[in-house]
Length: 385
Image: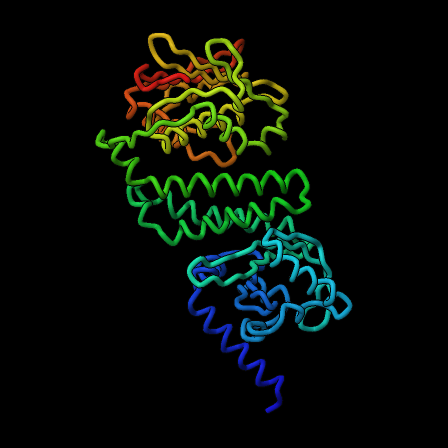
């Protein structure tokens, strides 16, 4: 047995041992994904690949694990890609690009890739997760991702919201989809593809939050939830939520303006400190701000007004109009209209969150002024700095 074979067997044994100790890095992510995914170690050897990755290149999993990632790289590009691989681990940052690769039959084709740095705090093992899409199949892949989320969402909707917390495996897979959508969004996408990827990411985040909070929502419905009170800056919270909506804001060319007692606020210097259940109030404002943004016509301003007279009041206004057919049931569960992927839970949950803070949530809407959502809370939860 020559030294190369011994070294290879030693390497395979090390990889097998490492992989067995770190299953969480891959198992829950891979097999449900209609996108090629591989994990390589710091030396560039495959430690895992999913079925889609194998189908892309025409190899079996057994043929790839333990082999260098350059197995699927034409000879003329191995030097460049090996250097990029080393640079990736040195910088520990995301990597994306468009490359020429080859399948098992040496047939060359182009792929679009994105990679993320993985680090296990317990074992100190560093790995690289690479997502691979055939350049000619990018749009099809995005549609497949959408279908996969549809399947999971249908599974969720057949259960009562109080039972969703038990769906640990779905939370893991949805978390993976959010990560994949985030990485894929950094590719060169056309406007339609960008829209779908953003939608996948937002739906995934929202569904994870629903699953994580299902037990609390059920208790809110029964009037038994006790808020976890802490102090936080409301202006900073709103600024963070609008920042998360940056892509949609840019697409619709919409701006936000924030006023306190008719004076425009600067999130960098102004603060409004309030006491409440920060996690769920953040959820409330996320729902209301996104709804306002989605409903707003293009190139308009969404106005947020904070008033502190007899009550603590927050008004969110946009130029869109709530359809007449859903006005009477606007805060009911599963009410939605005109949204491609609306769940109909956002305003229902937001109203519950207002009520656990002894507050109310209401709206006014008409063709002339648009729509204003008004949150009213007891003034004693507020402390202005």
